[in-house]
Length: 193
Image (cartoon, rainbow, N blue to C red; front, side):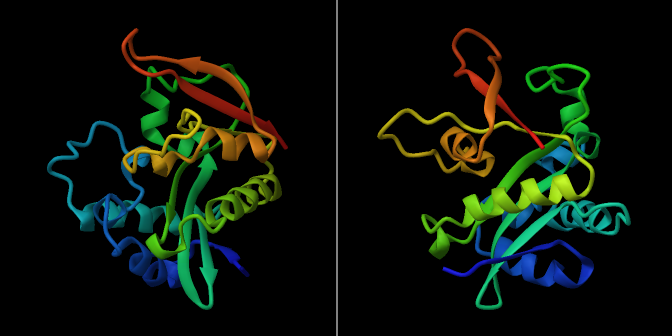
């Protein structure tokens, strides 16, 4: 499997649109959820969310994420950037900063339906590590789902990536947090670059 990973630029937006059009949350979310705070998601439109990601793609300092290609077709996406790019993280109680260390964050993965289980997310993670490092990041952080052994990742949580995938890439759990005693623990992982 040969995968090429490229930063999202304006000319790659149609490729990403084709990937997101395959259905599910990406079709309307456009990876805008973490980029805005307090938006009523029941009333958000796909075009409004797309405009958020398009504006982020115009950032001259860094791009909002990476697109994976195989045979010229977009088969994956990862959203990676400085934590400050994600307004929802800034105000989150559950995902509040662990400490004062400046970090880049990974908040979202999308893999084409027919490409799942083929290492696309792992390839995107490795590319995200390289991308963050090449843009001066010294610490990379993510908020994956922890899946019990022999269980499937619920599709509503798969966008976060799995804890085991991050651990294989050298990330370690720095904290586990819960909304309340009944909610599952949510790991926060980091990798020094």
